[in-house]
Length: 391
Image (cartoon, rainbow, N blue to C red):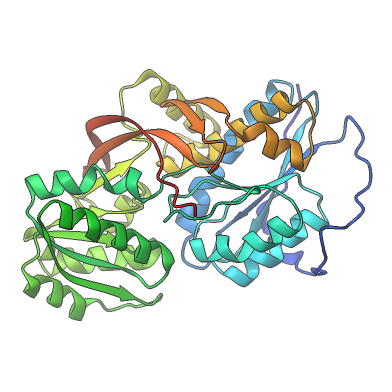
């Protein structure tokens, strides 16, 4: 059994002296008993640390369990954390450092699509897999990118028909001004049209807005019955708190995209109730696999820790990496790709299947609503295949 040799992510903040290079770097031979190094580029500051910390919970447990079971191909695993500060430029610097200096065989992260898109050319040029475990808009299709979370059809195809049936058929869409909300709303408007509904308003906001009263009034005045909401992190928390204080949540229902249970404590006790989501994990589920996973996370990180689907998808990515390398029989970057393509991996909610062509995953999905301090499952939707958006 191996003890984990993880480096604290804060050490990465000082390691910013990056030399831009190419994929033709001659890497030294790795001894058979040297650690297999995996990089993690996540936001631990800059506004989306809520998500970075959730990702870290899943990665930490996976690496601990892998090492306690003998590592990968008889070698211990070392995960090296880097804080991208919720910034695309910093994301590129950090992933370049991990690939060139630390010689990782794969990187997991980041959270935002802007950061992922900024990192992708580096991963392609340096032929190093990026294991992306955040829900996103689709279309990131490359030999060196694997997506372990949902794309629009998996999150919207069941959520919006339920909203149309139970809440009303008029929709207002509000989110952050970047590619994920834009693409999500594009898909959502198509589904709304097919349902015979009407999109009565659509707005995007820059990061860092502190006062949302004007947009809340516009949404209220629109008469919309459903708010399709895609504003992550601290800004989203601010909006929901102000919308609740101004009474908006009493006149419509929120379909919350990219939801994390970690939001609820930030809204305040009893706040943010009856918001609807479609997610690949509900931590309050009575499914045995979920209960066991939640118990293992809490044993590793503390009884009070909040557990969202971001914890599980990052855990899944690390466990799939192990399975893929053992299938390949070698621990190098190309073997990660070859091993993950077409892989089926057991997860806390059932089998995860990686499509060999698109590198996106089929997942068991759940329709749920916020209730109390967490989510309540309304319907288990079964396995939903991804419409990855590859050309």
